[in-house]
Length: 231
Length: 231
DNA sequence: TACAAATGTTAGCCTACTCTAACAAAATAA
DNA sequence: TTATTTTGTTAGAGTAGGCTAACATTTGTA
Image (tube, rainbow over all chains, first blue to last red; front, side, top):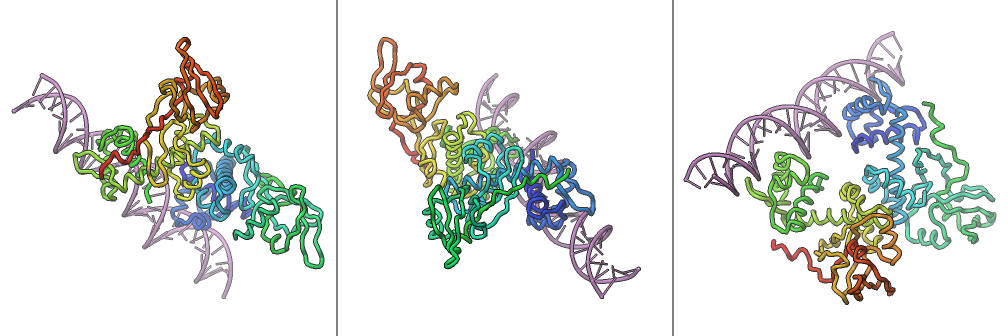
């Protein structure tokens, strides 16, 4: 059983490498900065995690997750993003409020809880920030995130989040029947005023470029994250 | 901001005094036993909590919650019971599984979360064990818990829990339209076979004494817990 | 290539929470 | 009312996680 702190180090390493950094390993200072602790502190923990075979680390070298370390880190990320989705979809938190609370909730230990929550939320694929939620098996899609105005004409996509939080915008989103994980088809763009015609739930709407810029979407062409690593 | 440990000590003191113990104060050994720590450990923490003015404690004396300590303890209990209700009602945990997970969830810090959760659950009054959930203001009803077969004829009550978990029983409960926080009226009892006629959702059913024994109810005559204390 | 800057490590110390062992006070029973 | 048991306290030590200050190694550049 890992402590909250240990889980946070694994998660940091995941974020700094495969997930956002797109590289294999991270340095001690980098990890320390990400967790808001001093390098000396991180150094101690890295030695401890190496001892537990959760990371690969050599003195004066960079650190990377082992297979078992990565598995645990992905589980924490899964919990984090499921909780964010819960807070957003069920408890009406705004997307900028969910992270802080999910930072706490992600450490609750109960595999039954995670699976039940996943089911309750109807197995969501993206969280309110548009980040992919790993499955129970630890698989995680890397979405090609873009905004609705960047989507090509004639293609379908899925709404995964918003970039604005004003109530007027949110009410508009609601009015056209849009919400997270909803499918959108881009039908056409008016050359004259750049209005975008979309189809949601079988209904057609015209939206402005300003509106479309604030809708985060993902195209269907996604690839599994795990294939990016070898070991 | 209190640590998990400090919160647990306050909660223990609440349980051992006003709530279940129905007395004003608890001894060091008693508190230590309740928290599965050694008396020496509890002693240190009691001194620390006294320092923070959360408990009244004198060397070789008993301990009790101050007004502010009690307020914090009740807040923790509120969170615990709301989470239990969530797990039971929304995630389909059984009533004997909820406690362990709620022990972790009760320490999540976010007043917004608690209030939103309360609203999401439609302001429940009792948790799946039939224990009262304190309100946001810290008020807590002390119910007169009994089983359905103990309820007088002609009177109404509210289901607050069950005493059995077999699927056949639970399916039966479901079939008559019963669930937690549902109102039940006891219409009559057959002298011959002791069958109890009840009304739920405007529909009438006859249930056996065996069934009724396993339904926890609360009569309407409840009194606020806080009136039990002076300071 | 040599040296300065950046990066990483070690040693020593701190706080929170836990323990055991020894001791002190209070409560109870003879 | 004294002796014994129960209850509570203190001292000293350990683990986890954090810090600063000093030192070591690598990296990058003049």
